Image 1 (tube, rainbow, N blue to C red):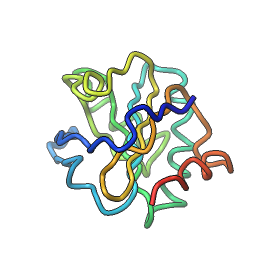
Image 2 (cartoon, rainbow, N blue to C red; image 1 turned 30 degrees about the horizontal axis):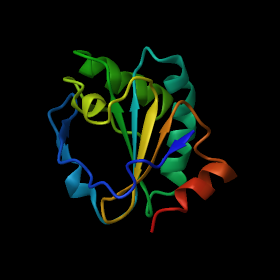
Image 3 (cartoon, rainbow, N blue to C red; image 1 turned 90 degrees about the horizontal axis):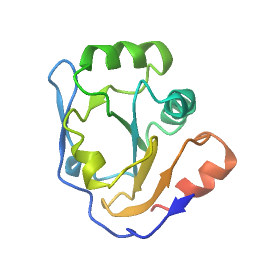
Image 4 (cartoon, one colour; image 1 turned 60 degrees about the horizontal axis):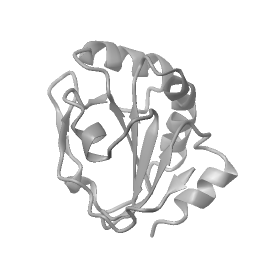
Length: 144
């Protein structure tokens, strides 16, 4: 179900890291729509939707940034290997302190948050979904 109650909220200024120590600033990703997916290796519905997210990332590479953020705590290397096998286009970003989970008040994984190119929230979606079908395309068309 789509939640639009935070529509227009500014993207948080969090910095994420991967197992290699690379960093990405969420606020620095403005410029094209951003789909942030909070997931975990132990979450069966999360794992099930990874291939569709990977296909979406491939199909919309120039017009949409798909950012998967693992909620696995203390298992950075495991997350990287897990994604490499299942969704090689998705980068293994980590949220080891669950700061994003707290910020978004997330209680269910997967949770996906969609931002427009200006870094304003469009909607949130709780639960798994097929991110590479026509309905998802209609949802993603809401961002300018």
